[in-house]
Image (cartoon, rainbow, N blue to C red; front, side, top):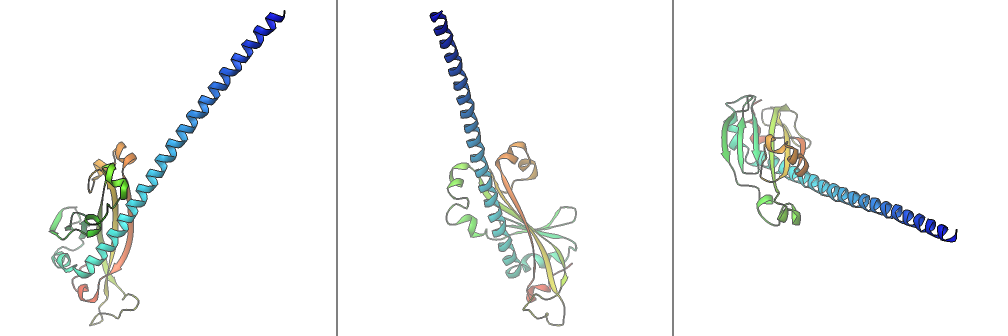
Length: 211
């Protein structure tokens, strides 16, 4: 009887040990999965922030360009009503018709914040193979009141209001198109941020504004 009890105790101990081992393995797998998800989530958040910063810089860059050098594209645009203007990180500036066709194209120097100094994506960008880029659309041209602190232009005409839509990208190549960006892999790996804002043309540029 004593021997049978000892054998039964050994069998129970072995079963308990196996159950505990399986439970520890399950907890370990859950911990690994949670860690991987946290790392992936942190990476996605970082890329989304980077895309937003790129869009913000592109927005300010385009507003500055339109007020300082806007005549380069506003004067040709006077022959194409209801058209928009598109600028991107390659230095391309184009007039886009309502049908999406390019009616006029020119090039300007690329903004230095993407070409000079440290990598725009930091150390992450040096080994990931991803690059920053942006595309900005300027449309919604219409007459509007003078901005605060500004007097109306000579002759009493109104200022020219504009609407800006800036898109910042972090992808494996500059300016990804929808076919590349919207793929299953693109949605998992790339990042995009869109910002919108409004501004007015300076008095000396408002004469070129065609609505």
